[in-house]
Each structure stands twice: as structure tokens, then as C-alpha cells.
Length: 462
Ligand code: SAH
Image (cartoon, rainbow, N blue to C red; front, side, top):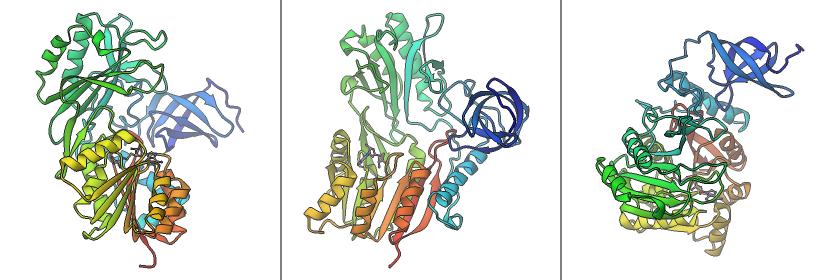
């Protein structure tokens, strides 16, 4: 093998993209992962890290661009830890995601011939400004001016950005007001190293359907430390749609953005959004899908794959604030939702109530514990015709998959944000009497390497 050393430079052709979006080029047969490159690029790269069988390179220069390379719309795309694919055409991003799902299902899931059952990924018509939630760290630049933006990859240095092209446009005006308020009243941003300063993050949420806006100031201390709150409120309430201005207290030395205590400074302590004809109340701490346009597509597919007729008992596992549960409730006889975070279940119950939906019941706990317990307790009465799962990236516990198989629902609808764990779990289910009928990737996160997938499974013996 060639003697490859750190800091050496090489010219390579990018032949593939890895699972986290970095381009892959080879020095001889030795693969290098190189961020910000595109399949087809010829690049000069510097080796920055070496492992036994692969390494990492920094992009030094694009010598000959790939035909799929596009100019990034964002000026700080390379430094910012947010987007991965600003330099890749949207069409090719979608192709990458479709392949990622297919490869995982084939290689990890052992699902041969799955490509025929896969629908083409549903992308966005306009993949910009899609996010309804933003969390901006607050700090100072070298000149001491207050800045907001996003963290650089893997560090907490703030890359200044007031016009993020995937965030809601409303944020630009909000950030301007918040920053000038801090400058005017000499309010210090939080400094991680000394654990001093007051303002840690600005969080915003925008209801897509309602236009309602929430602004949350995350503080290292009590909101009583904010001077001249009236002046800030006066400015912020000029923005159309402003509904809720809150402060969240987080005095911990932690990477977690939000603390537990929230105080309302003005207006309501939540905003509302609607999906279909179901209304949801969303607080600063609630989990809510960040791409409202594609959420409608995703839930629509979940509903389609569940193919409810009105007689079914449905379990919605990992239900969050009950978004999918309530969406399905109108078409089912009874829905049971399970979620580990108690506050989310409070939201779920309130959301059921404000919509007058009575055929849902929510339980707090781990899906893998609640489902078998309730099934057994009820002597099988709380059975399932359809089970929907929407787990976090790590996927489902095997014990949960076992209970699902024991309960023998006719259908399982798996909503996944990680194709690798999806594939692992599908391998289990297809090994235990279920068949994959439909696979629908949906692009919820344009310019990132993440992809969402809905899978419809059915028991083989029906
Ligand atoms: N279906 C919801 C939320 C999906 S996100 C929606 O579309 O809005 C995944 C959820 O699973 C999170 O709310 C998380 O708190 C919850 N969760 C994580 N581990 C869990 C477990 N073991 N049992 C139940 N819920 C869990």
C-alpha cells in the first residue's frame, strides 16, 4: 500500500457519498471521506485524520466540478454545522436519499428486490425556508458585537448567520430586534467557558397553517434579570403573527438547549398549528415535526398505509404530542398512544380535548414496557389491528418488536428517521411473519443527509 501520511495532499475523484453525506474518494484503494464534495468532483484534498482502513480529508480545491455541483445559496454553508448538501443539486440530494434507503433495506434488512416496492422519494417543490423551529445560539464576534447564527460542525463556535435559507423567513426580523435589544440595554450573551452572561439561545417557532409565532429567550438565570422587557415586547409584537413571548431558564452547564422552567412574558404560552383539520397546541418544549409541509405528506402516507375503515384498534407508539394518533383517530374506532415524556402526553391529552376527539387514550412510559403490560393486563382486549411506530433514530427495542409479533396486528406502519435501524427492525419483522408491502421515502430535511421513510407491512397469512 502507498504510504499515506497526515497533512499530505492528493488529487482524487469523488466516487460515492457516505451515510453522513461526505464524498468518498480513493488514494489507490484507500478510501478518504471528504466533506463538501460531490460524486464526480475531481478535488485536491489534504489528509486530516487516518484510521486503519479509511481516513478523512479536507477539501482544498475543486479541480474539476461534478455536473451535479451547484453554487450554495448560503454564504456560510461550509463553516456552518447545519446543512451538508448546499453544493449538491436538490434532484441529486433526493437520489442520494432514495439510494440510501434502498441500500440499507437490501444490505442490513436482507430485503432482496425491495427496489420494486419502493415509491420514488417525495421531495419538496421549493426546498427552502421549510423549518418551523429554529434555535440560535447567541454570542459575540471578535469586535464584541452581539451575533446569532449556528454552531460550526462539532464545536460551539458560532457561525454568524441572520438569513438562514432553510429557516422560516420571519426569523430575520425577529433576530434583528432581539440583537438590537441586547446591544441597547447592554445584556451579555452567555459565555460557556466562564458560565457567565445571561442570554444563551433564541428559539422561534412558526405555525405553518396559522402563522402564529413564538419567541423564546433561553436564559442563564431568571427572566427578572431582563431589563426593559416592555421595550422588547413592544418591538416584537409589531411582527405579524406574534402570539407568544416566553423565557426559559437554563442555568446548567449543559449542551441541552432548554431548561425545564418557562415563564410567559407576553401572550399565550403556546402557539397553534393545524395538520389537516386537527389543531395542535405547541409549547417551547414540545416535540413537533420541523417541516410542516412534508409532515402532511408523511402522515398522509402513514394513514394511507394503515388503510383504516373505522372499525380498527390502533396503537401509536412513540406518539410524542399525539400528532399521528389524532390524525388517525378520525378514521379508527380506538387509538392508544404511548410516549416516554410525561409533558408530551399532557400536550397529547390537551390536543385530543381541544379537538373533541374522544376515541384516543394516552399512556406515559416506554413503548416496550407499556404495550406488553397493557395487552396482558386487559387479557388481550387491548389488542391491535394496526400498530404505528415512529421511534427515534435508535429504532425499536427487540422486546417491542417481539410484543408486536405476539399481538399479531394485521398491519404495521413504521415511520422512521434512520434507514439503518429501520432496516434492522424490518429484518426482525419480516423474519416473524410480516411482509413489506410499501416503502415511501419522504424528504423532510432538505440539504441534510437525513431521510424519513414510511413502510407499510402486512401479516403474510392474510
Ligand atoms: N410520532 C411523533 C413523535 C415521534 S419522535 C410525531 O410525529 O410527532 C419519537 C418520540 O419517541 C419522541 O417523542 C420520544 O420522546 C419518544 N420516545 C423515545 N424513546 C421512547 C420509548 N422507549 N418509548 C416511548 N416513547 C419513546
